[in-house]
Length: 330
Length: 66
Image 1 (cartoon, chains in turn cyan, yellow):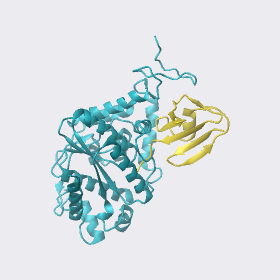
Image 2 (cartoon, helix red, strand yellow):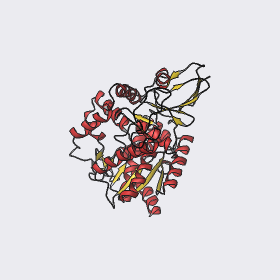
Image 3 (tube, helix red, strand yellow):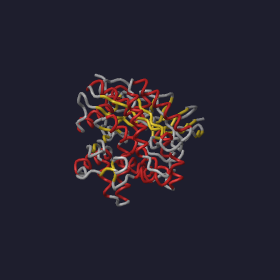
Image 4 (cartoon, one colour):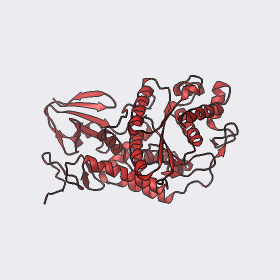
């Protein structure tokens, strides 16, 4: 009988624990090596399990996948497209063009190529059509806020607007296990405890806030990258030119990866315990009195900031533009 | 001469003729084995694989993003 044990020497190559073919990855937490095919199946099964727990693996369910063109969201879309064929749910892809120069062009190009390859309908929202020709960096400069903060706010606004217009059951984002842990620990370190429940894998809809799901919640960042490389899907492995060097999230990720080396499986175990013990906030957000979108106060952040910069709240304009784009897709 | 291409930084390092394990290479680059994917000839390497001689490897830093 052929041995499938792991030989940790330079000469011997491990074999896949499932089929005995040459392995491409060793999953330390599972103590098993896998070939390319069975590694892909492992990633697909983690996503499938997450969507099942969220109650989204049903025929007729419609999910909007937010795709940047980077490794995580591209992997997510590829996996979800294959699962949608198996389970009968419908996936739409949303790409938000943020106006970050060539970087944005490369991301859009990769997203288009992937959506074409998978046959998934793609909606592209260009923020410059909403922000009077400005990209996110110019908007951030005008409003005197960090680019990442304005970018996140704008993306969340647009994702929800498109989801509402399409009438989907949930918005899926490409956050992986490492992202979730990094943001959770950052929120804990900063004692922003009210932020913790935002990092659950599934947050049901509430008022005008469409449900959110994070299908890659239990997939390690290294594995989303490996999946993207092995499956040869189009994606861009470039860094945003506005991303801070050695952000707190980066430092936390490196720390938890060193911990994972010593204690294999600790990342996913932490997330599972967190998910079990944390409740979804009982009170959802209110609605903005200007645009009707989710808001913590009387007026949402997007309307408030755009009014400050452009002299009028641009929420209603964003929603009309999105309505027009969605109507074209129907 | 071992050539190391670092992505997404697009940096190239030349590390001489000595042999070392992938885990040692990553440690030297300040990364854990959980933070990167290392390819040689387009194929993923294991952390215990040895590189040396005229190998050309690509280190994809996983901790990166948009």
